[in-house]
Image 1 (cartoon, rainbow, N blue to C red):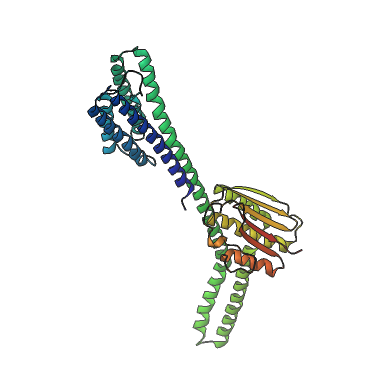
Image 2 (image 1 turned 90 degrees about the horizontal axis):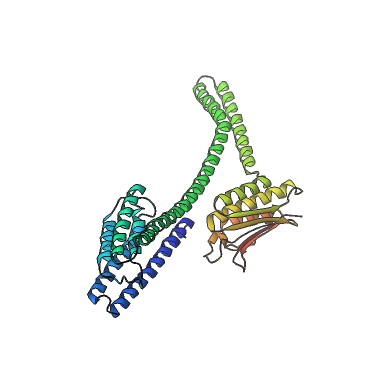
Length: 382
């Protein structure tokens, strides 16, 4: 499945391709009509169509090359520039009743801006405007009006192209920052857990190692002391195991309010608008812990297995419901298969939740509904 930035990039590029295609069709039709009316010869018309085709095709290729970064000028840009000059020099209908061919030059100037610094593009644009104004004035008309028209085209088209690429860069950077936040959150959680385990086990394991070495040395000299040291090792091992179990139990003891806040923050960081309406203050601790696991697993599944743009979390009458639109029009992941506590088709996360809720006397269901949404419901024991 393509990511959102990739989809946005395709939409922007294909949109531009469509506009260029329509422009090319209009150009070709204009040249054909002019040739039919004997305003230009058929040989000149064929040459003009060929040069226009080169310019427009190269425009699309150059745009793809320069969409993600600012590359150096390429052969494509040079070939396209030569074709632009040919379009301007070849015979064209210029009596004012047909199209303005200078738009091709400013279309090429707009992709020059994606390759060259602003000052270089400005110099090249000035040269183009001057040359085209002189050519147009030679065919009649006040040079002031011609100059104003050419300046408008030379400024607006490159500015539109720069804005087009800036929009894509903004979408891409926003997505990259969200991904970086997610990776940072995971790294911080791993570091915290590693630090907790180190604080719990570091000292105990060091003492166990020393006493084991001492017992090994005393085994052949003083069996009684060796046995006493091994008894201490056994005691410390039991205490360490208890500490680890307490730490893991504490890690597994989730707070419902914290999980709701964390789910909303994580989903919104990933680009999913999340609305939480859950008044759970009067729930007993056991029910809150169960629902905290439901919220965590539900949010994880939205992140991993859907492309949701919105998600709602509500709690009323003992039922927590998570609803998202991430499965509409897409193939449902196996993790998102329906589960009701007895089905074997769901992924391990949802099936584990169903087993946990059923064992506690509650109820659990998850699956797509008719309106294209995925709904997860958990009912805590009364």
